[in-house]
Amino acid sequence: MSILVVGGDRLGNIMDKLKKNGFNKIAHVTGRKKGDRKIKIPENTDLVLILTDFIGHNMTEIVKEESRRNNVSVMFSKRSWSSMYKNIEQYKNQTKAF
Image (cartoon, rainbow, N blue to C red; front, side, top):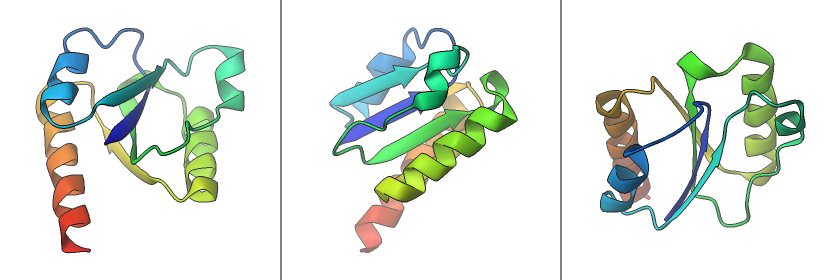
């Protein structure tokens, strides 16, 4: 599976935890730079995870619209691993249902 994380300056050990949870391709965009507004979601991305406490409202709208165009699931989370983990588990359960 592949994931795009939007928000947060650094992910630190979150990258390792994402890998342990089955994400072999991890992309990260801070969302703070002007150029980030021209975001292109990488091909074959399964999930976009937006870290709400590190991203502005306008950037959130841009990412949501780009995700809709590419038919990619979007989830919102705080930067804490426990919050991210809940979203990841919810996503995994949704994809198993189909």
